[in-house]
Length: 213
Image 1 (tube, rainbow, N blue to C red):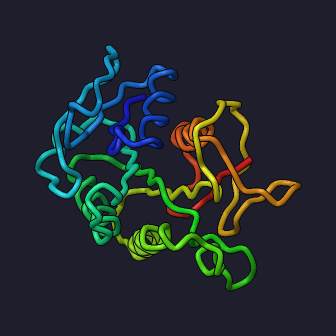
Image 2 (cartoon, helix red, strand yellow):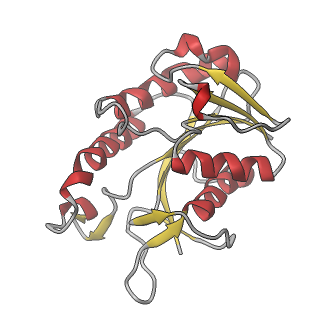
């Protein structure tokens, strides 16, 4: 398996990179600043590129089985870049012959009750809301897309953080998944397992799913 990965220097992106390499994948990591990814591996190729500028990465993604995008606007604060980057990928991946795109989404637009989303809760942290809304706009971009690319938008649990890789998780749809105690959580490592399993199982095309314990 060969994948291209945008956002490998972020926390979730690094988890996806580690899981992909542990599975023996060939990985093309496309990053703006290679100095932020000092990792060395015979299966890893690092390419300098910016997702917003397709000319910097189109050649690099040729021949990959899938592209994974773990993108955040936290560093530069440009929240409009989140849905804009979704559009760039959907528009340009067909030019490189890439048929599969997996997007690391947000949990904010998952439903907790009919017509009520996570982000609508008055206790939802205000500092998280702008990025959650930007991720919601990205989901709208995917749902409106006419691109031939098969996309999957993967929302994590409400809490995603460093933790053990158990290899166990549940897959849901539009509703937030919670455990018996009402908690919604998953480790970054198991989120990465779930995401890469979608490539291998070739499922969940053209829809949003969520994964949690």
